[in-house]
Image (cartoon, rainbow, N blue to C red; front, side, top):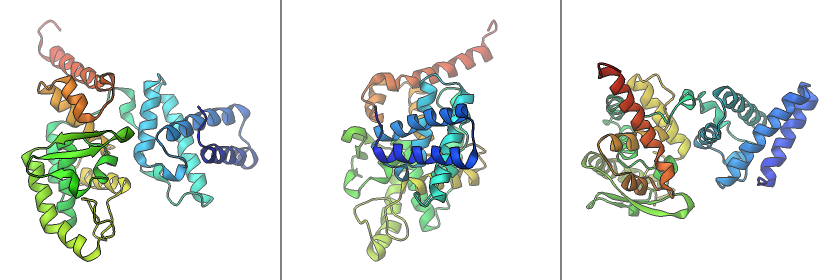
Length: 303
């Protein structure tokens, strides 16, 4: 599959720069070229026609896709270096306004199954925002909804007020491939969504609303972006003292893992996550089996 012309054009520009300015060996250039061509094709499949459209989640998911393809952790780490150097070059050339790879940690989780938060870690994260402040109350509502529903970061920031049914405690979510699904949320999430709506959002929308339809706003009246949501999660993780490379998608993994641990049906989980194929959802059964194996080894007398 050929990637968008702009993506491949910028890869060629970068490789020319490496050839002329850096004098790298042919083998190194070939490796960069293969890695970045796969990255460009991955972005193209996600509907991103330029590197400027890429966000942190895209880079993270590209690395996960390479793990699924069978690459070793060392090879994936090399690919991350290539992606970072490309973005840094394009930013220096004025092609990109921002190098999103600065926010991407080397993903330790690539060595194993999808990582998830423990329940005490979730509690610490949810308690991190200062809900006495307007931004803190907004942040708490975001975190509560991420964990309560397992929605993707892109789905959360695109939520509109009309998509939330507070009476039935459900969200109408437009997922990948423009597939619509309805996801329930609990009482705790509802409480903070209502408090944010009535105490914060109503004021920001009345005074500065730029994107009035979107539910999650900034104090400037603009809708919250994925980059801002990512930074929000990292700030709360730092405040909670969680020394891990946390990112919004980890809430999705935790949502799925904790539901399965409590006996949720795989098909129901598939529907809530918006997976078109149940085999995608089945990765979480591997996570749960790994947990059961650890418990068996810990407590069985002949393990």
